[in-house]
Structure formats: C-alpha cells, structure tokens
Image (cartoon, rainbow, N blue to C red):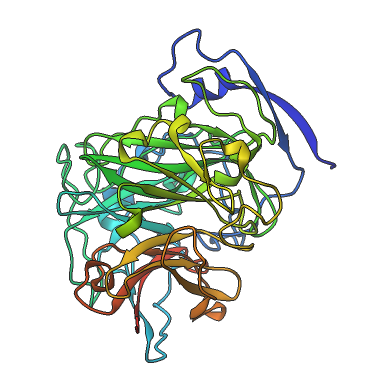
Length: 449
C-alpha cells in the first residue's frame, strides 16, 4: 500500500492522551504522514505454546491502561514458569579486559526478580538519572508481564528506583510499597507486585501505538521526562512519531503530567502557533528523541538537550536552555553549526546543523570528571560506541567501540552513580538492552585517560 496522509485533529489526540487542556485550546489540525510499512517483527514474550510468535505490540486484546485487571493480579499469575516469563536466557558473557557484562537488571533471571516483584518479564531502555535526593530513577520502555495473560500485561513504560551506588555485582532495586514515592516502584495497594504505567497511550497502530521515554533529568526537586509518541512501527530501526513531549513529576516519578506547550509535533511543516500551544515547526522533527546533560565549566548554567529524528538513522542536533525554562520551548536556543540561535527555524538543512552525522541512535550523554570531558554513548548496528568532547556542540571524537554488534545490545544508557561520572574512579556503568531476551543488562567499561 502506498503512503497516505491522514488529517489528525490535535484536539482529539490530546483528549485521548488525557493531557490538561482547556475546552477551547486546540482547534488547529495537523497533517501527518502515516507510511504503509509493516510493523517491525519481534516477540518480547517469545514463542507461545501453539508455535506462533507474538508480534510486538499486538493490540488485539490490549487497552491503554496497562493495568493487571484483565488478567488477575500478578500474585496469582506471575509465579508460574515457562511461557509466562518470556524468552530471557542467561546473560551472555562478554569480557575483553576493558568492557564486561555484569548482570541482568530486569527479567525473571535477574537478581531483582522483576517478574514476581514488579510484573516485568521483559522491558528495555533503563534510562537512569539522579533525582537530586539520593536516588537513581530508572525509566523503561514497553513492558510486559505474564506472557500467557490476555494482553501480556503490557504497559507502555514503567519506573523503578534505587539507592544502590555499588554496581560491581549488579544494580539492586528495593520492593515497591503502595503510596511510598521513594520505594522501588510505583505500585497500587491492590497490586503491590505490579509496577504501574507512567504515561499512557491510545494503543492503536497507525494512531498512537505507544509512548516511550528517551531521556530524563531532575531540576529543582522535580523530574522531567522526555518521551516520544510512536504512531507506527516500520521496518527494523524505523518508526514514525506523532510528537515528542516533556512530562513533569512533583512526586519522584509516582505521577506525571504533560504540559501541552512542551509538545513538538512531527509534521514536517511550520505553523504560526499561539503561546501555550504545541510547537509546530519543521525542525521539531529533529528533536523526536532526546538526551539531557547539565553543562559544566564554561557551559555551566545551561541544560543541553541532544535531539535525533524518529528511528535509528538520523543525525544528532543540539538545543540548550536555562534550568528554569525546561517547560518553555520559546526560550530554548539551538546550535546552527556556527553559533547559537533562539529560533529552531535557524537550524540549517543537510549536515550543517548537526553535531554528529547519521546514524546516531538512542543517545545518553554525561559529564565525566575522570576524563574531564563529556561522554556520549550510542549504538549503531556496529555495536555500542563511545565518543568524547570538551563541549556539547563538539567537536566530538571518532567513535570507540565498547561492545561489538554481535552481542545484540542497543540503547546504552549511562548510570549517574558510576565512578567515572562521580569522579571516584575510571569505571563507567551503563544499561544495554538485548533484543533476543527483551531485557536490560548492566555493563561496565573502564575508561582510560
């Protein structure tokens, strides 16, 4: 089927997403392109007893709430084995003397036993950030529980918390406690062993199949999570987004709201938009996925946001803002290749405005006191790569391969309690997701000056 265009009213989209919008706020319509490519084939719940492989995000029996109500509490269904627990196998051993796999962070085989304790048989990403109060928060993407239950207990995203700062043998997550915003997970009293969904989605392929976190940061006691609204999965490494947005939490990630003014519509057009409305600029397509890092030294006082288009084949772009302006896109500045501009429209086309050429995928960026440089991890098909730079805008070094592509890791997300990021040693820890197991592993690499 050739690509076609669908007129999707913003008001309807935002109503479905349960954002706080006044009755007369959104009246414009945006033209979005929905390609005809088929969904990416994958099976996070593995091959079922009938020999069929469940497609990724088969929404035939799914709602968008991600609650366990349709399949019973996990206490009764999550204690089984076999197909219920998904396809996770033993952690692949890798140790080249510099980089090594440490332990599973998630999955039934992990020391955290996330299947029985949080209703997580499979998930990915594990985006980690310091909450500013002694905890590391961890945001995960599409998450599955009991693979034999209707809907596989799918949640679009979940959050875990930890105070573990000794990662030598893995990362430990404490139990979730209902009502406790500092416990290991956000859980309800009627399902204390089931991590709740953070941000909802419609759950319909071609409209909004899911919402996936891409980066997060703590500012002045609040948590800010950048996420993308995925409209449809395409060929491997390709997907289409409706928009990216920033959700905010005042209770340590327990609940989230999305101010409409933080939405960047992926429409490929620019429209004059009143203050407080979603942003509709052609260059918003360059910021559908994000990576935050706080500036250091000459860059101090700014928060930098790296942006990439939807999918895994775009280049990286750069914005910056004062911490107090995190929710005000009109006060962001953008790197043009030769300087900073207060208009996103000034990012030039082609390669001129990029800080890194394509392909740059699922970035994480941090300042390393050990190296006295910014460190970036990303994962093209060749494997997990690291680059360094003196400033966020670069120039960035040539990539150094940390993990070969044969290990099947993607989305490397650095952990802020790593010694290389706290200034106490050379070890840098990061999460890597492994598609075959559809779970998150902890990996350590030893940096060298």
